[in-house]
Each structure stands twice: as structure tokens, then as C-alpha cells.
Image (cartoon, rainbow, N blue to C red; front, side, top):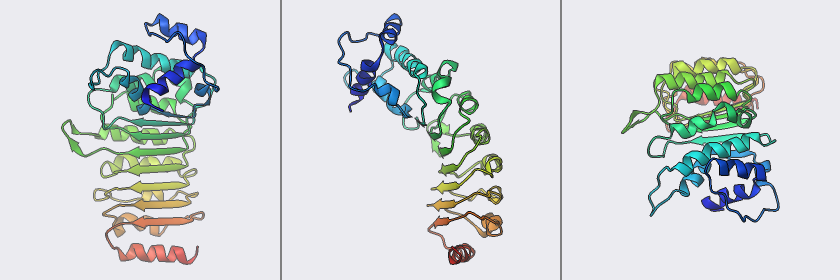
Length: 287
């Protein structure tokens, strides 16, 4: 479905009351829209927020140049409010902004507005791939989304024209997001290269629920220890994919840990470490 098509499909699913609400806010709603066979809004399970923004943003395209306009600024919060008032349980939320140009803080703040809380509160999975955000965003997300079972975080700490993407303050917000979950089962962190001392302790709040821990394309040079994982009594899968600088010192607490339910250790690295290889061989010998 095209970007425009996504919005027009949503438009076709609106009730008369919802259409009038948009019209009162200055949004021109097509008078003749063929209603689809299904009410697609009611079946919405995954919200790709980047896709939604792109669809609305595309409507403001002029000769290939994208710009925010009054229609965009009204339509986004209005459509979110309509979704929040629908009786359905959103299962997953994809948040991505790192490859966007310009300031998108307002667009993300709409999502954590109190009127939108019924929409995002039930989510069980969050994919978070963001760089610079309004400092209020992550604390509000943590306070509203506390039933997450699967959390995937991409850490953007590389340098850019804006400077360091994620600062230590943001790292504490990520830690708080982990700590606030009632029963987190799957935790994946990509590009984890800094702020280990801020984030790793939060793992201890989920030691009874975590079943899968995955690190992807991460550099552990600044990490002191992975002791925070050692007491995850229900851990089933421990994955290091494309990681570097995993020393014996960092992993030693895991060598000595008792993981009664562990089924898989996956270790992918260009560096050889005899102690790690012995640990994995011993594990494979009894599983």
C-alpha cells in the first residue's frame, strides 16, 4: 500500500463522528470515500510510528520537498486521538527517528500525551531506534508503558553533526524503561558501546522474568562486568551477535553462574578467547 493509501484507508474507516471531529479542526476529509470491507483501524496490532509520520508527511510533499504544514501538525495528534479512543489493544510499537532530518521532538511528544495513553499503555513489544529526543519523552514512555515483554533498543552513541547522539542522561532513561516493566522477557540491545554502568544494573530488576538477552554489534571495551546477568534464573537464551572486546574478566561472573533453564549460548565474534570457548564447550556437552 502506498503512503497516501495508508492514510486514505484510515480515512475510509472513520465513523461520522470522527470525520466531523477532524473537520472541526480544519482537516479536509474527502466527502466520498469507499468504505473497505473491514474496519482496518480496529484490527491494528502494530503501530509503526515512523511509517505513520511518513504517510502524513508525504501528503505535504511539494515538488519533491517535504515540509511540515498546518495540515500535518493538526492531523497527526488528531489521528492518534482517534486511535486512542478505539476499543482495541495495541500489541507493539515501533519508534524510529535516527535517519530523519530536522526537529521531530513534537511528533514524538504527541505519542506520550495523556490523551493518547489508552493507545500505548497495553503494548507488549517496543522497538526503540532513536537518537536525539525531547528529554521528557523517555520518562513519559516509561510511566505509560509498563507491560512490555519484548524490548529492543538501538543505542546511537556515535558522533554526528549534532554531536554525541545519546548522552548519559538518556542512558539513565533507558535503564528506567527497563526497570519499570512488570515482567520483561526478551531484552535486546544493539550498538551497546557506552554507559554500561548506567544500564546494566537495571537488568537486576528483571532477573525473575528475563528469558532472552541479546547483544548485537556491541563493543564491550568500556564494560567492567556482566555480573548483572548472572542471577537471571529463568534465562533460556544468551546471545552475543557481532560483538567485540568480550574479555574473560567481563564474562567470568557468567562462567560461574547457575542458569538452570539455559538452552542456548550463541557467541559470534571475530576475536578468539580460549576461556569463552571452554565455557561454551562445557555448556554444549551437557545440553
